[in-house]
Amino acid sequence: MNNTRLHALALIAVTVFLFWWRLGHIGLIDPDEPFYALTVREMVQRDDWMTPHIFDKPQFEKPILFYWQGMVALKLFGDGQGDELAARVPSALFATAMVFLTWIFGRRLFSPMVGFLGALVLATGMEYVFMARLMLTDISLAFFITAALYALWMAVHDEAHRDRWVILQFVMSGLATLTKGPIGVLLPALGGLAFLWWTKTRSPWRGRGLWIGVALWTVIVVPWYAITLVRYGWEFWDEFFVRDNFDRLIIAEHPRNNTPWYYPMILLVGMLPWMPLVPAAVARAWRGARTWRVADEHRSVLFVMCWFVPTLIFLTIAQSKLPSYIFFLFVPLALLMGRTLDSWLRAGFSGPVERWLSVGLALVQAVALVAATYVKPEYVAHRWAALIISAPLALGLLLLLIGKMRAWAWVSVAASLTVVGVAFTSLAPDLEAHTSTKGIAAQIAKVRKPGEKIVTVKFMVRAVSYYARQKPDAVVHGDNHPWFSPHPIEVAVKSQGLAEFAAKNGGTVLCIGQEVNWRNLNEPKDPADSALRGRCELLAQVGDRVIFRVTAPPQVTAN
Image (cartoon, rainbow, N blue to C red; front, side, top):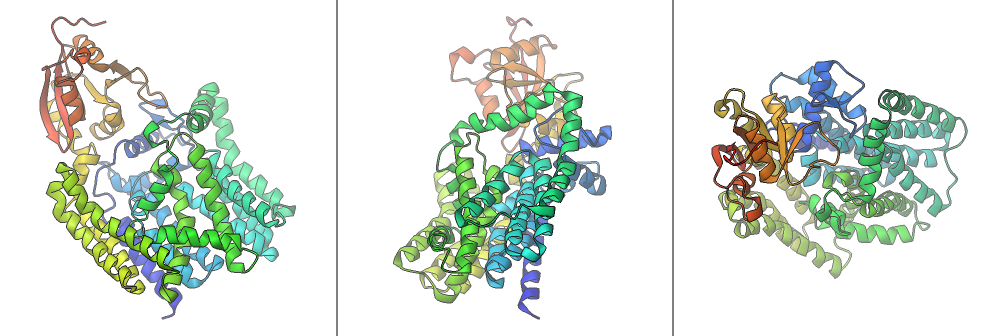
């Protein structure tokens, strides 16, 4: 059996286990998965393939293609119950396809071995693994962006078939635009223009390929946007283009994430168990990009760097930051890491600085999980799991220290398999209890009084609606604007607002939230927020999710 078939079989085995095994075993993760799953369910129930709906109202946070994927998956794989498997099938499918696209891309850019190693590193990096198991738009977006840039590279270097590659690039960019909006055009263009400008390469966007490509892009993108704009006018324009695109560039939805080192740290930690490779790969790529005129391989490195660096800068400047926003940059980073790993397997470290920096990061990832069980008391119960997961990482540290690179690479793959094996067997119930509303939602019918109103926190409102199959009557929050984009649900502001809501609805309401929410209402630290002190009765608890009944104080009147 030749190496190509061996590589293909290895990647199939890895992706099947890491992405597909027990894919629907854990409930949908708050808050984003239930948001998309609920939207897809409502669209299927309404048989509406044009307008995303949530809580029976149109919502325009994302364009339509991702919801189409979810609707098809729900019709094919849904069982009418939780439908977690159906919700996640598109993500697992695109994540698998992107691993194989990275393999093909790496073979073209560098060599068959670099392509395989880059795809293997990508598939076994921890953020990639867990993102592949989530219902999020970023996975299919990353695939289309990667395919667009691959087509651009081929258009530049395959003159005989330039037109077809340019057309493919426009098609992939159009699908990306129909998945998440203008960023689907911007990001491939940013990387491509940087490469063409830096290398003074003639633009491949010319002739028949350009005009056909533009026409196909228009056919893919324009109809849905035009129909929705005509149908909903300013409502669509304001929510999608203004709030969900432009405002996210200039307003930090998650202010604590808005730091210059946020994305570099996500890329580093997200590549566990391959963290030792990251700085070596970036440093070597930087040196190679500076000498791109010397060899074709360095020109390939420059292309990957032009894909990686301008986009990283752009996303760092943008104010709203989440780990998923940078997901597609794991592909160029994995290609650079595959190139460095290939060099390590053949010749070892390039010098003492690379050696000791890599060994230091191997030490960090080997002890971090176990150390966390000592720092965080709530993790003590899972120290055994941390030890099991850390065992191959500790062995990898030893192998890296003595220079056994091939053995270190396979042990790193084994570490990823171990993480998934432990996470989705013994740890699965606890993971679900602390990340999903599924368990606590099953308790609502057991403790709810007939006709009693349901209130939840914004973090769980979509999940409660999804699993309880009933829209909550209100959300309790610290101000009148819980969401970046509005939802058609009444807001009770702080404990006073919740007390008033209970008073006008029979004197009690059933609340679903996290344990900290119950404690903050029942035993508030701030005297000014003590309207419900001692009036929140705990009824059920699953992990850190709780159900409690709020009884309005006698002196509170309904406003």
